Image (cartoon, rainbow, N blue to C red; front, side):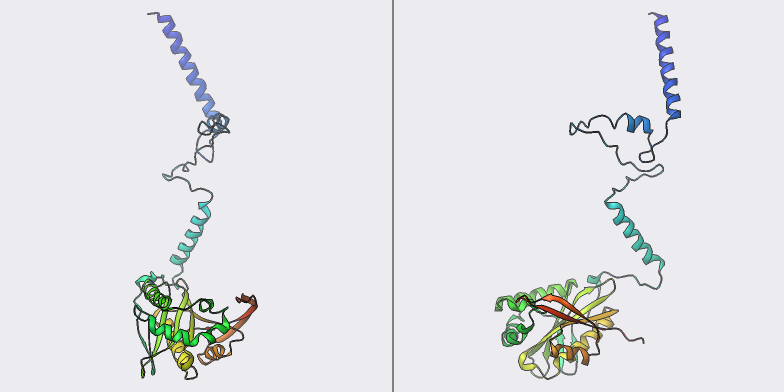
Length: 290
């Protein structure tokens, strides 16, 4: 073995190691990837990406020094920040109670008033609902911008489908529909419900329509008053809205009789199926200070 050659190789390797150490000590650490900016960005960035065959390779998004997680992408960062802000707001503001899962709320499935029984629709209610709808279609179709679903053909099957979906939606807390039956006769006289509920607030909207031959007896006002109190008591609503067409005088009288306050009129807020623009009245009620 040539010892002089071996020594020369060792000396050369030692010199190269010293040079690399000196160069490394002069390099600055990249703030993005915690690597030497000369070693990564200046040498690797210029190389073509073997996966695509074109363009420079991007450095990986590594965690910051001292962190074991991968850095979030730019697209996910704002969402994470917003989530953190919302979470910190909930934890630091002691006056805001935590919002329970809506599906876990135990809500009564029956409301009793002096003359009415209100309950969610269920399988088998289709024929009763269909009879009330067919009788009331001429009146309901006067305000299609508010009730667009009545423009469609009403059938026994569609009424039964509504009842079964309503029962499922009530259980899942996606919607809280109720049918109002007169105690004396057992007949369906109105349909009402709490719709578009925002559980984080919580707030909701009360809606209703009355069977034509039952109109003028105060059934809808009785049902809406009871359902609004239900919203305050059981879902702890901070706000209950009532939305109606500006020209629907009967509906506006219900709002006023039930203690709702007109907050404003939204001009040209809806377009009816005949392409006419409709104005919408926004009423609201709030829980009593007590």
